[in-house]
Each structure stands twice: as structure tokens, then as C-alpha cells.
Image (cartoon, rainbow, N blue to C red; front, side, top):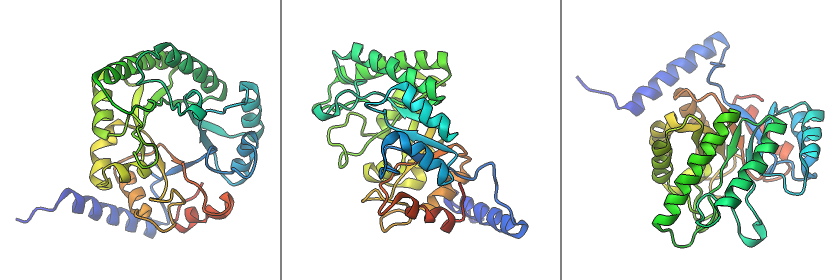
Length: 291
């Protein structure tokens, strides 16, 4: 008897499921993608604190963002509350980006800076109700065992702190084309440290934009990593625009793979709109999804 590959079996199951849903006029709401706007990339036509309302007006129910440099907790809370929108994720305070700082987690000798950045970001996260925090590793030109050791040690510390607040810490491999010398540029390394720490409050952030440029093989990688994924982000490759713009990736298929694997958490739209943000949102309806 001929055996079907896992890929083909999943595809057949997905097609049957979709046909059934079409006949019934339904989608599987339990696995239908939930999209949140990334305020550091979208609605940049206006100042940061005004983007909460713009996202709400565009139909979004939730947002994510980098650390809101230059704005107080009170300003961010007021903007979010006035817009009546959820914030699901915030990036850790990264230090002075003008000096090339992108976090301290993997930097020996910067343990206190890491703890301080974690505490500062935790205060913002609690204020806006964000239940996920992206912990950034920092840039390292020559990685040594000391970097690996301090990274794991800092993440162990962070996981314990975040567990007390019921916030999920996320680590994200970032490709070397976008950010040369970023310490965490490998899914193997990310998975290894997550397994070593073995905390319910440390998970993987899977950004499809970075995945494609780090190793490709999107289907099999999602299948392998799905038990460890705590958040997903997307952007087309190579120009980091909307998923329906020209590029290497078929996002309609990728969303189906995520659905088939049971991923039903938020998908962050960390892309640069090719034109205006609102104009670029037409892909959601064209892909037969909604906000």
C-alpha cells in the first residue's frame, strides 16, 4: 500500500476541511488567524501614541509594539485606554539604539543593565496589560561560550520574574541581512535554550520574515517548532511589505499551515506598508480573513 507523506496528508485534510466549511458557509473560528497591528511599523503616518486609535479605527482588536521610547507609561496607557484596544506584546527596552544596542541578554558584563531593562519593560507591560514580552539578545560580533552562558542565565532569571506576573517571555531569531551580528540568529540555538530552561513562561517568537532568510523550509520548520511557539509575526520577503506584495512567500498557504497545526494565537503584522497602512490592509479581505 502506498503511504502518503505528512505534507500530503495535511494538505488533503485541509482541503476537505475547507470544502466542508465553504459548504456550510463557515470557517473554523478556533484556528482562524487573529491579526494584531504592530505600531512600530504600521500607522507611522502619525505619532506613536495616536496609532492606537488609528489601529482601532481600521478594525484591529489588538496591537503589539516595540518599546515606546520617549513616552511615559501614563501616556501609553491613556492612548490605549482611549482607543479601547488590547495590547498583546511589547518589546523589551533595548538600550541606546543610536549606539547599536539591541538588548543586553547575551552581553557579558551587562547583567545589571539586563535586569533593569526587564524591570522597566515589565512596568509598561503590566500597565497596558500585555501578556507577552520580546526579550532581545543584543549584537555580538564574535560569539563565545561566555555569551551563550550569560544568555541562558539571563533568560532563566527573566522566566522566573515573568512567571510571577503571568507574562510570557519570547525570544526571536533575527536574520543577519536585516540585523548583522545579532546574537540570536539560529532556530537551533533558540530551541536549545528554550528546552534547557524548560519554563512555561519562555517561548519562541516565530517571525516568518526572518525564518525564510535564516533557513527557509517554512512548512517543515513550523511543523517542528509549533509546540514551542508563543507568538507569530509576518512580512513578505525580501522587502518586508504586506503579505500580498511580490516576494518569496505564499502567505495564504502559510496561514493554512498555521491553522492546520492548531496555532490560534495572535499574528503580528510587523511589516512596512508599501503605501499607506490602511490602503495596504486590503489583503486581509482578499485572503478571506477579517479583523
